[in-house]
Image (cartoon, rainbow, N blue to C red; front, side):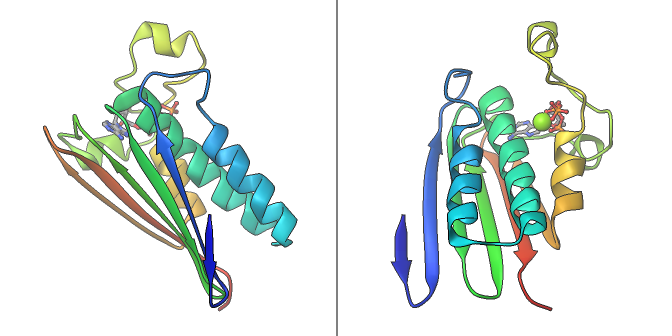
Length: 145
Ligand SMILES: Nc1ncnc2c1ncn2[C@@H]1O[C@H](COP(=O)(O)OP(=O)(O)OP(=O)(O)O)[C@@H](O)[C@H]1O
Ligand SMILES: [Mg+2]
């Protein structure tokens, strides 16, 4: 965690396939934003977006990182992973679309609601993906109009 000029940066490394640490980044973010005193509605949106992105990196990617940039005007959440990438982004963004295998569904994931949920929580949402390279999400949540 780094602070400068009223800005705060937090970076988390996300390990693929590790369900013992999965969700830790999102809960840490929630805790810190709560301590700072952000409005509960903002904290909820940031926590949900971070959690869904974190779980996607754990479940679907080969590992990656999530970086939050907090300024007085907005919270930006950058999620980057190392492959396998998403072949059809429009399809992946559809509610209910999931490639999660049975063993992941047994853990309660794989409803195909993560990406649509992230978009709903965002004021700005961008997704870039390249098969064989990785996926990047740029999420922005406004703190002021
Ligand atoms: N970081 C990623 N890397 C590779 N594929 C991804 C990634 N994130 C999402 N996907 C693909 O997009 C699909 C839809 O993602 P989404 O988060 O909406 O649903 P899900 O993860 O399958 O289920 P849920 O989030 O409801 O538990 C995934 O099933 C997967 O095929
Ligand atoms: Mg998901």
